[in-house]
Length: 559
Ligand SMILES: CC(=O)N[C@H]1[C@@H](OP(=O)(O)O)O[C@H](CO)[C@@H](O)[C@@H]1O
Ligand SMILES: [Mg+2]
Image 1 (tube, helix red, strand yellow):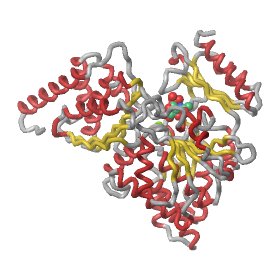
Image 2 (cartoon, protein in one colour):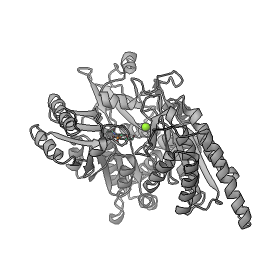
Image 3 (cartoon, rainbow, N blue to C red):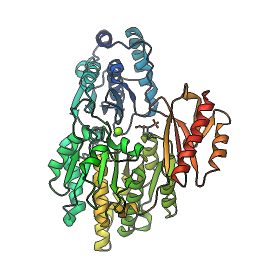
Image 4 (spheres, rainbow, N blue to C red):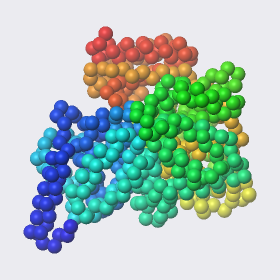
């Protein structure tokens, strides 16, 4: 579009509104559905989402135009949720989640009941946000393997195309959430240092960093990877083709086109919540060989958990996000010490957790003088808190996390003049880790390589890694309540301020259990309240969870 004359501009604006109306009429909003852009964007049954996708397309273009054509990402996925669900979230130019101040705009647009109200809300929004509609826009999008993906992408593309030639689109096809984040970040990186903004660029960058880190320590022991029958299977295949035989990867649960298979009885969420092997991994027998370890991705490959069978009793042992954070933070602290940077450049390594982190992990870190910050659930909170350290390690217990290196940390490492070959080696490795680890978002594939690289450097197997600390037995319970909005949490969601009096009751019950800790918060992604409980023994954790669940039911009017 050009703005050569006021009449022409008015005409172009009218044409735009007409084409929005045409598109909107193809994708009417279903009645009686109320959408919210939450922690993970929009997420619900896929059949309810076409109108949302069309409107998200409009919003993404507004955001890109507002940011002078910076590339905005759109990911169509419902992660670990069941196959009939789907979802969509926006990615900001830095590769981070959409700026929270724009979340309400997404919610407002998606809830306009008619084409007319959509047009008027769009116009108001564009004015209010001071978007110059003549600016160009750049959008990159991708989807996971869900069967509903192609239809939803069509709706999204209809939303993008109403702007005509002013919008450039880059369709990454079927790929993981973290690869989409990587491409967004790399595309917007003016220095072109982050990497080539393609899937191939991602694979090449990681293969190079991993090769630097493993050197002649490879080939490593075989690793079994449960891909949750999702997009991780596709990405893993592409990556291992690029890597060669340094890490012999054996993918499991790769049935990406089998109906109903996605996340079904497998994947990181299954393993973490059931605290058990996926039956398919169990029956494959791959873990019965002593020293074997495996990991599970979730449906869009942004989470990972590891596990193995302990040798004496063949008991299942989970190595979750907390175990990853602890091992990685301890290792990076050691590398920083070895790097012997000058006092003024000494890098501060810190860990960010949520209230779901196992109490033993927090205790282990703090007793070793590693600073720990606790923040509210949701990656955006962790990510921002991690940015306050030179090297910020953040993981949710469920396996979603990464390690952020600040710009000044990278500068200090690049400028350092090492005093010894050991120091030079530590600096080289720290820089290689900063390349290997996805700087935009938690990434199962990158985290898998991170864990394997640390294990290789330590000379550890899974049981050595596990030996650091013993998790407190814990339970996570989903409680369905008539109205979860009455539950209001504070203090990084460790306490409730509402319903009145409930927090005192929770604490009274908690005190009865040795090492008991419990908290209640409304979910940001599902219509439920979550109860977390941990205590010294399994049965105490179970009983504490039951007692707190009863309190929650009672407080919400159920008996
Ligand atoms: C206990 C738990 O695992 N909560 C998950 C879940 O959030 P809830 O707000 O608890 O529904 O989904 C989020 C998005 O994927 C993830 O960040 C978070 O860790
Ligand atoms: Mg996920």
